[in-house]
Image (cartoon, rainbow, N blue to C red; front, side):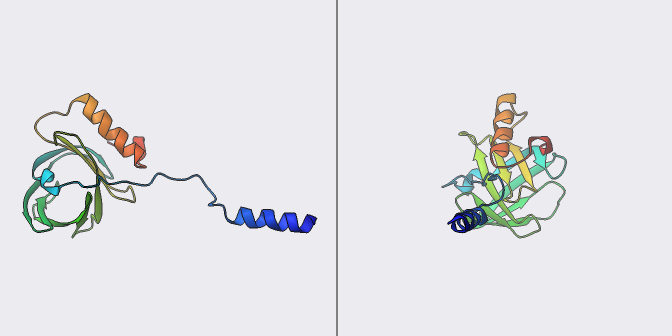
Length: 148
């Protein structure tokens, strides 16, 4: 009987994931990519220093055309629906993690958390919106210390 209990406990232990659950990244369900159109200033980033402009300037079906910081060439991204964008370059898949109700601030992130951006339209971002954007990134698994 003792051997049976030990075997049962070992079997249960083998089912364990072995560590704490990590947050799963979530995209904004039902996000309309037309909300991306226009000029955005990058006010926060993960994986590099923030700065520069993002310009979502055209759309043809599910394909978006944009220029990002550090690039002069047009980059394409495919709208996969529900706030998911597949970029044709090394950026890979980005999720729209959050957009404020008036489309003034936007948070983008990669599922592996190696890349993220906080974008803002029209002037300086108020401290409360920047704080909210940073909190959204942390909630989606980003390390607060890595958000610049």
